[in-house]
Image (cartoon, rainbow, N blue to C red; front, side):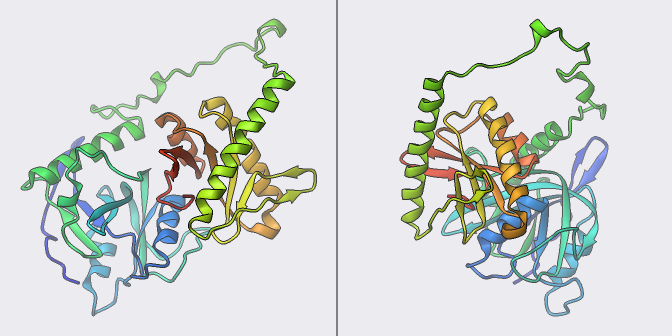
Length: 322
């Protein structure tokens, strides 16, 4: 490992300057645990470095913990098999840490940096020259938007996404108060929202979900992965993958109303089975990809999404569920 390209690279944002870094998701250089480290970063919204800050033989541990400052941006990504592999990116908050409340990691690590806001991404838009940012096989390197046009394009795109995620305008004023959320009197009985679902529509939805689950199960079997079901007293989850501790709820539609139902079911299943399952990874299985608003909302709840695409399945959790 070397520590090249760790010079000064800054981009001004809202009167503040920040630096941009790329950190590999392969924390311990063990191909068997890369997927687990990716999921840990998404779940706890943090970047991890395998080397300790005081390791004299690996100076990148010190630089990760000390040179990276609050307000800097970390992109968690790497080059793998000549393609970019992205986990997400976020703004550094606070000093480096060695632990977080409830944190369980696949292996030991040197230090971590909390990222807030943090945006999980399975892949960045194709128009971004991401491979130009991943041209070094290092645990940590810095982007140079002030000298590299491709780096500038990547950093500017991340800035815009992060700006929109915080709800802050370019003038530094909060825009959340302008969101479409208002207070109003309670509705009268004839104004209350409710939905009546016929038996035939329920049976139709259940058939779609069952067929979707069968296709998903067949897809996982190609990877020597198996789904089971678990019963908690009088309720039964749709699917559970023991090896990866994935708890899945299938829905017949990617519409938000179905995601809302699935969230309640997943949280209930996870709570009911907490003694035997611990803290499982939660995801909703859908026939198509939902809109970005639903994906962002579910990520905030630490719930992933799996959807069917071109006779295969993909997810927004870097392959944890697919």
